[in-house]
Image (spheres, rainbow, N blue to C red):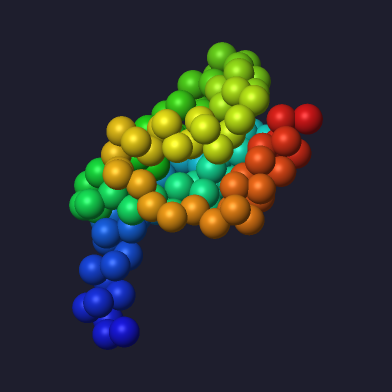
Amino acid sequence: MSDAEKSGFISKVIGPKKRWWAYKARVKELPGKYRTAVEAIERYMMHFVPTDGDSSASMFEDLADLFEQAAADGTSIREIVGEDPVEFVEAFVQNYSEGGYVPPRARKRLTDDIERASS
């Protein structure tokens, strides 16, 4: 894969680099359990590639907004994602993407990671 192809792919998956790194810095500032939950959700969301980098960047920024506000309000992770984190993420990304294939192991990993973060 050439550098041009790589940069195009990266831009399509995560959006412009500057926005991506700003998002990552925001996530790093979250309290531990919220950061763990966001990173698990982020990993799962990578299976859903929006049609453009701007939508993708907006999707991750909105995720950071949601968890920053929840941390500030003291809202529990389970109150955010509910009992089924897979259902939560898939509903969340429908606003930005038409979806993608998610392997069963990714669903289990998300569920396990959220369980750890919320306990």
